[in-house]
Image (cartoon, rainbow, N blue to C red):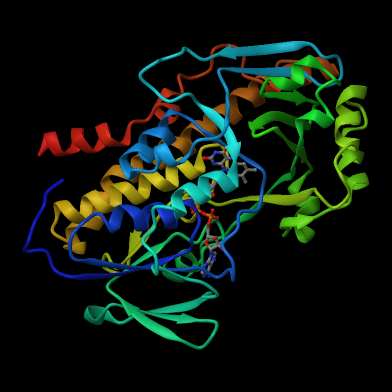
Length: 413
Ligand SMILES: Cc1cc2nc3c(=O)[nH]c(=O)nc-3n(C[C@H](O)[C@H](O)[C@H](O)COP(=O)(O)OP(=O)(O)OC[C@H]3O[C@@H](n4cnc5c(N)ncnc54)[C@H](O)[C@@H]3O)c2cc1C
């Protein structure tokens, strides 16, 4: 990193205290002449949802942030299986190559990641109950932020880390629209002891697929077991009432989507205590042409910048990578936002473009395979949901080394 004394002082307002906002704050406080405040709408910082995967890419950035050693719990995911939920057939098994130089990929509780990040955020940087309502471009003065409680502040740089329904993005990128993908997700954690006798395969991280739904089972460490179940419905018919994010839902409603699954799967679902399920409706939005706006006074990180609805199961990693790269770009250009933000775009935009292109290509591949089947059976439809022909090498995501990406860019200069 370029250490400099001539850097201008920069007032940075981070909107949102999720993984993206917290990681950005940690990275920015390591560079000179930057004052950082996180504005978070919630009165108490808490994570909804159940588990989260920390792959090599996420470990790499956690290491750079100095947080990796604080995140200690989780279940190693060396093997991952894909099963037919009605017949129990194992369709695909991936064994990850063990690399002793790397931290093991783990599935852990979302709260564990959040508290590890929080432990490294300097005290006093987070202001809670600060819901951003609108912002105004004040030219050379900066950006004026208006909060729901009637207060305002002015910042030189606004980091929109406010998630998929970002107010920052909707203000600086007017007309951006999200739409319901058709997928509803129900998630919970229960004690592993409550289900472990049901099927020995439940102890391995895996997906149990139906034709338009699946359940995902994984241990997450500390004696807990995660269930993340999904069901797809035609978004054209279902979009109107699909706004829920982390809301409680009745057990019977969740279970009704998996009535044709194996009895032991249905039994596992029935053992979830009433009131423990949370529902998440997955929304997505189009690719942005730029991640920065308002003459480099606004930048988006994490879900706000790429509304992919958790498509790669690594969005927290992407959000933390964004925050770390933003800090390197600012340090490199001595806090000159007119140079640092285009550099952020140069590094991160092509990465997100590649994700959008990958998802479109996979969808086309699936559609072509489906078309080739005359009257597909249930089992053929299930097999078609899983890319078993090798697929694309995904190491550009799951093994991404953001430190090396930055070094490569610096070396080209
Ligand atoms: C079902 C599912 C499974 C996933 N699994 C994984 C996984 O295994 N691994 C992984 O890495 N990622 C996973 N992800 C993705 C990951 O959860 C997100 O990518 C990640 O949380 C994004 O972090 P973020 O900080 O950008 O946004 P968020 O986590 O959404 O945080 C945004 C924050 O901004 C706050 N906020 C919002 N609006 C305002 C406002 N107006 N004013 C002030 N504050 C505001 C919110 O309260 C929130 O705290 C998954 C996502 C889904 C949906």
